[in-house]
Length: 215
Image 1 (cartoon, helix red, strand yellow):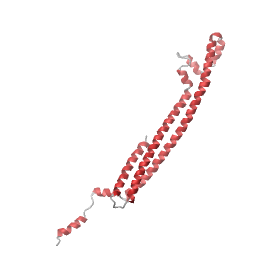
Image 2 (cartoon, one colour):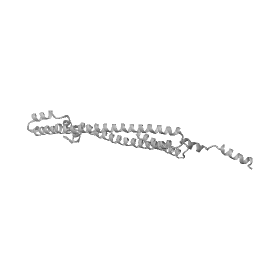
Image 3 (cartoon, one colour):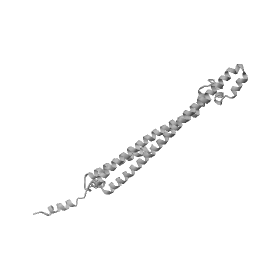
Image 4 (cartoon, rainbow, N blue to C red):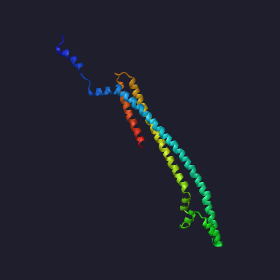
């Protein structure tokens, strides 16, 4: 014969509410959370891939511009050597040889000296000192330095493209975890586990993406 206390125990057990942690744990496996995760991860994969493509395009453009500037630098170097420096050598030789023997001929050579050669004659280490060569090769050196800057930019953009691809890969892992959680039954104990792992992967991938995006 059951007592009133015995009859009250099942009713009390039915009225026990799940704890706060249990409700949070179940919330991670809800359709709302999984839907948000799938949507967010899909968007971030597309965004990461787009940023990687932009970085790759910038890299390709920088390489092409750098190669063009490097070619122009080489061409300018050859032009300055063949036309300006060798011509200045010949003019100075003519001036030096005739400075005592025929001053009028020496003056002729002097009058057609280049500005760089004239300036070098006024310096203690002239003519043809380092400042002279720097002045003659100024355009070539400027184009060479610009080419090196473009190649450096290309290397930086290549690294950024790789980092964006890595972020997209991490987001894809998170998406696969969220997808596995979505196909499990609502009362499955693994569903919240996969959802929580997908959330953690999303945070890691987002940090990797933002650290690359704001470089």
